[in-house]
Image (cartoon, rainbow, N blue to C red; front, side, top):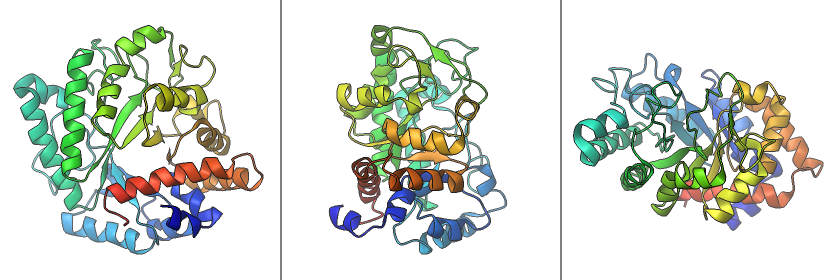
Length: 331
């Protein structure tokens, strides 16, 4: 990675830490102009496409850049499906891991995970923003349908097996939403505060993340919840203390990804540019964002004026490049 990094301009380095929402029109040109690390795709990117036309579209993005893009998607199954909701790609939506486990245990979960990973790779998608590690037993909780509905240890066992299955198909895994969403409200629309003790978190929410890390997960996505036991000021995404805990206490060495920086929990309190700068300073390696043009400029300016050090930027870019190497995108 050092040889690649040494030849990169500051502009290229900054671009590599952005996992941008795909703009549709002009996506290939923007990928090249902003040196993007990757695109995250949503249902609109699959609308009206066939497997062949979709592959061609992704290949046009890849052909525009010098460093291959991460192509990511949220294909959890159940309520969150971007690909399998379209019959051109699958006869029916992938079921949720919760329903699969309830009906057929771990074997059913992994059988579908293998099919899902095979489909994604065949389309040129190397990253699935999954599995969901959050634990909740409350049917009214925001994460209830997306969680496995199991106790911490059992959840961890399933998460570890899913991570390993995804790796067998060279699909990058992204554990979410660190340090655990619990029963908190939806941060798409407002700030959420978790007041539980660190002991409670370590015996409950953090168990599946520890299992996923031990299984070799590639990346971990951090939530926008304020977790008071770790930082009572900043949402986890923007908290150096949360990231320090993940690195030092949990020993995670992979890529740390922000949740969408346009969610209201962030946008209501921070401007788009400042949120991106704070996210880098907190310790994120990859910024998941809609307003990447504004945020790219803000991060670039922060690097040029010394607010973001070269060391911080280089560390983030190195982790992103290593992930691309693991996924077979670069040598």
